[in-house]
Image 1 (cartoon, one colour):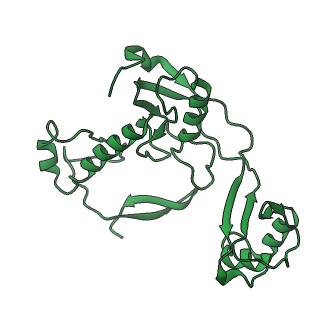
Image 2 (image 1 turned 180 degrees about the vertical axis):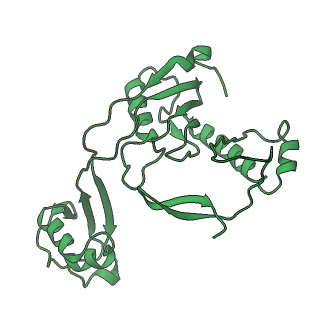
Image 3 (image 1 turned 90 degrees about the horizontal axis):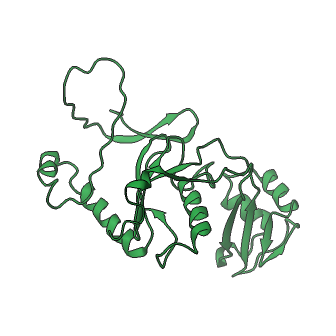
Length: 250
């Protein structure tokens, strides 16, 4: 990477705006296909998105004016759909769970930014967290500094993820070429999985990025080194709708 713009002082810089009380909601877009052209508006949504809300819930959303057809608000649930029509459902804004908003810059140059991600902050939108994410703060920060950023593409984006509860180093690319390069380096690192000794021997040669996780454990660890070889899958966890990915015999 080229031209460090912050140098040794980067670790002293933080940015982040306090979260608004409500987010902007979400917009879901659909185009009516031939197979759906005989359906009414309420039939389309209650059939395609039945897991999102029951029929009565979709009826209320339509009557509230939350759905448009070709840009026009439609409140009549019995409206017949036509092939090619564009449907947009606006999920109303909601208050997202609490999350940190300040991010510390550990390093920055023309191509990338290295951030210290705090625990409790999600990297990318998902689930209840659509606005309170690292990506949102990066976009707000880039918009504020767009006049002073020297790169041609002031749209930094994370190139990997850290779990919402995990704190640590998060690399973000400022340019498309930097994003491609960093993604390649991460892919190269994960390609060594299953060959730990080989990966360690190649650490100073071919590998460009190494990820090290530190964890707190309970009880007494008798061995200096432990190899975890259990399969990874989703386990239900309080407060996480889809569960967590963990190593478990099951």
